[in-house]
Image (cartoon, rainbow, N blue to C red):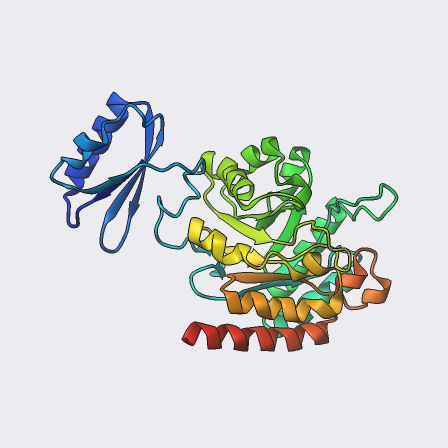
Length: 337
């Protein structure tokens, strides 16, 4: 249930009303204070609450019951866009286009530092890199693991770029204590026990859509994190599995405006995993910038032909520089319309 209060209400009136609701009913009340109004989001069994009684209160503007199963991620509860802000001032959401770039996997100190310096010069605000790699084949390169995390930290110290890297297991949580943004990959989108543990952290979580999951299922996975108290969630459209076989996956570009209509959380796009083909990354990135994505996460490798992981979908630092310039120009043009 959503209760919109009339403007300019005294705080003691609001507090007394919330206390009454929580005392009489088994509900949790989340408060959102906007520019022009205050919104109360009630989570729990609201079927026993008389909406007509609530609407009759002289300080209540309107009352609406919410049918969607996701509450905290729902835009109805939180009309304004959420902006994720890191301690260093970097932001995701809020009308800007954030660039996250780096190799699929960390391979050496020289490689990750070289790429980090290159993407920073081209405008990237975050460095991505895989230390733990989920691979379809058990014989493929699985990442440098803890050593890879240490190399990412060295690249961060060198460039100042916050690091984004994927977690595979609850058992690895201690290793990720000094990671700036923890990524949950497509295969772990519905690892609910992992999501609940990440919900207890005070750290941004980048949640990727699963290979065959609906938008509602993605939002419900975000709800698992948020229900535990961590509302710093970034959603990522990274392509879904369809009948098409030419590309690795199919980029569901329509998911961006759909999610932004349903949820207040920032939405970024991963054209690398969506296509699996390096020459497709630029046009897909441009499309994402044009349709209103809050950011892009792109795989950049200094030597894609010799990459230990996903070289076919990686672009070079020079290609990233051209891409970055184009997508920012498109984003600025569309934003000015």
